[in-house]
Length: 317
Image 1 (cartoon, rainbow, N blue to C red):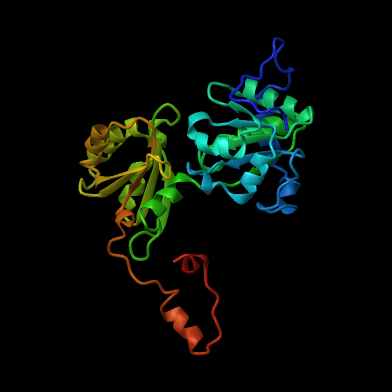
Image 2: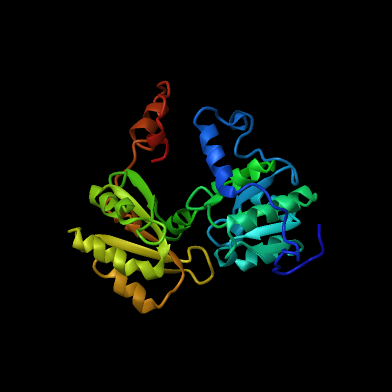
């Protein structure tokens, strides 16, 4: 490992070596995917990761609490020489606990043209490099564009999943996101704004379906206007809404209300960071029904009948 360091800016006077334009790499990867599948899909499961240094792992740091980092993620972070992390979205306690001896660089304010050469050059110099995203890289992580750009430069990458904040929120609320007789579906979504055009905002459609638990990833500042749009669209103002602020962090807070009241409640709380908004009855675990899995199906097995196959929905009840 390198000598222990705090947050650093790794740029030298000459800067990193020039490479392929990241957009060209992304376009090339997209074109290749139209005709060929990456053979590694069939060679390795999600739990089988390359040895440290053989590839750059993109790791989900989890929702906040250091204990919710996966075992594999922790092992890779502890072995790292350079950890490029998502700034304040990753709990500083996690960084101190698991990679205090590594050089740590925040990705905040750095574009692909800076991040990709930074990670590539460190990898090619023989350093163990880890890219640490918040939550799970597959949920609003913007990981793939970095991975494609690195792969285009000849640097292997891999994904290590993490715990997304929606799952931490459901654990805090002591409920399920899918709940028999209440919610058969879950939607992970975000509201219109800088990164999403109004026509691509489908929150109202999810809420209108009724049996969907709608999980919205957003900053607290966007909650009031998101609720106002739902009211303008004619949704029931009494629809329950629960906001879990900083799920699993030490300052976690739970604010409950309805589409009509939650915006003001969050504003009054004065929070200015990320939150997970859960719309639907599942958040309050009201009115759910006993599942088939631990009722009729279980009794069939007890009676000595040959166990029937259980589909994915029944297995998850």
